[in-house]
Amino acid sequence: MFTGIIEEMGTVRALEVRSESAKIKIEARKVLSDIRMGDSIAINGVCLTVVSFSGQTFLADVMPETLRKTNLIGLKAGHRVNLERALALGGRLGGHLVSGHIDGTGRLREKHNEGNAVVIHFNASPEVLRFIVPKGSIAIDGISLTVANVNLDSFSVSVIPHTAAETTLGDRRTGDMVNLENDMIGKYVERLLSSYQDMRQQKDISIDFLKANGFIQ
Image (tube, rainbow, N blue to C red; front, side, top):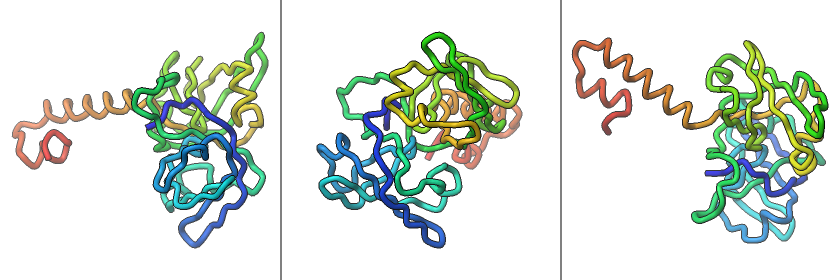
């Protein structure tokens, strides 16, 4: 579990793509201070497991599903990435609950200055947009942000100078792909409501039906 508060930007040192999977090597500093084998670190919002590390770098495996659903496949040596260690019990929850499991990708549509902030618009698929609400939370490349507005095919966020400077959002340009994770509360609510509607339409509620919808094991 993560909070969407980026701890530092790391640098990609290598991305070794195989037939269906990959290994990624990241140079970092802060997230390595207490690193251990098997730790979870979010790279651009993607929860990955540390499989080895040295004084200045760590290595993580990337599954085929992750390559298909995220922007990690487009990374090259020298690219900067957002990094966050898993939330520790007792730590501050400065952003919102982020799982590190990406729901889809979006593309930067446009950006413009508004006072001291930068307003950024992203195109996204209907499957992602259905869970985005104005003033709700969304994780963009692992960054916890508040949604400003939502349209039929896009949404926007307003980014303060600190966030632009301390994350990869400051480097993003029109057409760049970003990882998107919806607020998990909204996803659970939608799942429960859809199951409830199915139950109302189901004349005979069987054990198999309850198991299929996650009500019993």
